[in-house]
Amino acid sequence: MENGVNQVGKYQVLAQDIVRLVGGEDNVKTVFHCATRLRFKLKDEQKADAEALKQVDGVITVVKSGGQFQVVIGNHVGDVYNELNGIGQETSEETEKTSLFNRFIDTIAGIFTPILGPMAGSGLLKGLLALLVATGLLTPTMGTYIVLNATADALFYFLPVVLGHSAAKKFGGNPYIGMIIGGALVYPSIVALQASGESLTFLTIPVVLMSYASSVIPIILATLVSSKLEKFFNRHSHEAVKNFTTPMLVLMLVVPLTFLAIGPLATYASQGLAAGYSFLYNLSPVIAIAFIGAFWQIFVMFGLHWGLVPIIINNLSVNGFDTITVGVLMATFGQVGAVFAITLRAKDPKIKGLGTSSTIAGIFGITEPAMYGLTLPRKKPFIFGIIGGAVGGLVGGGLGTASYAMGGLGIFGVPVMIPQTGINLTFWGALIGLTVAALVAFGLTYFFARDKQQVTDEVPTISEQVGLPVLAPVKGQIISLEQVDDAVFSSGAMGKGLAIIPDEGIVYAPFDGEVVTVYPSKHAIGLRSDTGVEILVHIGLDTVQLNGQHFESFVESGQSIRVGDPLIRFDIEQIKQAGYDIITPVIVTNTASYLDVLPTYQGTVEPSRDVLRILV
Image 1 (cartoon, rainbow, N blue to C red):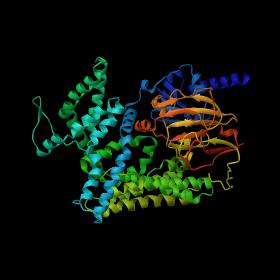
Image 2: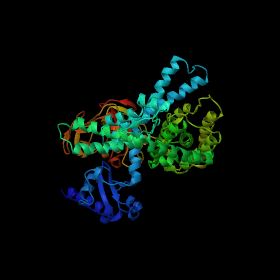
Image 3: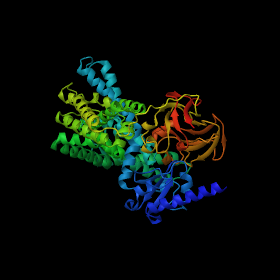
Image 4: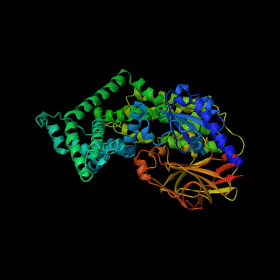
């Protein structure tokens, strides 16, 4: 009992220290918590002392992201939260007000994230077709080309329909109403009238006919308006009829409004945006692409890259090509060169293993493992990667390289840089530029960034007969914790463990023990084994913002569990469609109590498989 009282007192003192160091009660607008962090909205972040907070016993680290001041506590964050005595506490993020910029970034991310994969795949197919035509294996008149070209071009042509769905979901409207609005914009008879130059009126009002195929801004604005109207009509309609009267009224109003006003104005804005970027690019293509090559990874760190995604798509729609993606390609291979140099110099097998996997992932466009796991913690390699990206951008810009479709990441982005006229110097600029970016970053890192973190001692091997076992709580593909796109998890600040990309939406008990905490949003669960091992299973990244949607818990805090008991069900596809990464970290939160925590398995795993051993 005395220990329990001391623990309560400890959390109370910690809560008081945190409130004091974030600027006091008067500086706190709102605060809520997820599985590991207190997420503050502060009136003035300048009043918060982040460095002092990091030194407080019980605080793991401090993260500033998405307009939030996040204090990472770990498994006992709920206990600390309970000691805040209601200061600025909210039960839902929906009640929080964020800055206009943060809301813009969040909106763009929510709209485009669900379609980036199919869009990259379609773009890659367009690049492959361009390569086949350039080599003479296909011609544009062949049936094979016509079918594959329709496949590759369908998403881009009907982009308003696809964006109508994802934008409506983001704005809280009916996705199918959004799709209908997008479909009206590219309806064949409307397209034919626009192509023929004929006039059209609606209630005697002239309609400005424009091409909306592949457009971005008009459908997003139209869907925003339709979502607002939908909520208005639902509030003022009878329950018995609103399911069909609301869609009818919304469509009757929004589609004509879009053709008469929203569409033309948004199209002019799109053309102005593209012209503005083209103006800057024409001033100096070399500097423009070098700037993107240098700063893209920094944009990614702060989530600012989402603001450039609609500009890229808009450039492709209006101009038929884009050059921002060239800088992205160079930035990617700058980090690849830096992390490969770290890998070659490393003596620690763990670093070599992480470096090898991060290099391969980087080649295919995923730089977060390299950046958060190796280059950024060492500072100089990250800077050298930036320099490499900038130099590669100078080369790409100087040779006039551009992309002609929304392609894949990394090396998969190269095929879409083949012009319709065939392979020429502008295409070779992509390959030369990425090679130069990687070589510059590699050379600088290899010769001027000696790794002070290297370990020369032999790393002990682990037998599955040694230590305390932890079984896989989720069925899926195991990856290293360093590859998780969240620095709090990937850095090991929360503790050691691994991560799983789930194939099945169920969390199972990984040992006999008890449930310590089921978080209100059900996106995470804390467990303690009968032998004292404490783990956190965190389903997805930032999924606390779903407020329990798509999650179902079968257990409650304090409940005993046996190996294999189902604990939480979650809907993988719905969570992905909502724009969240489904990767699931499995963290031993009391790592410091043990000699080591080591993984025992790689690849695809079943819930019954031993994946961690806790050395005591």
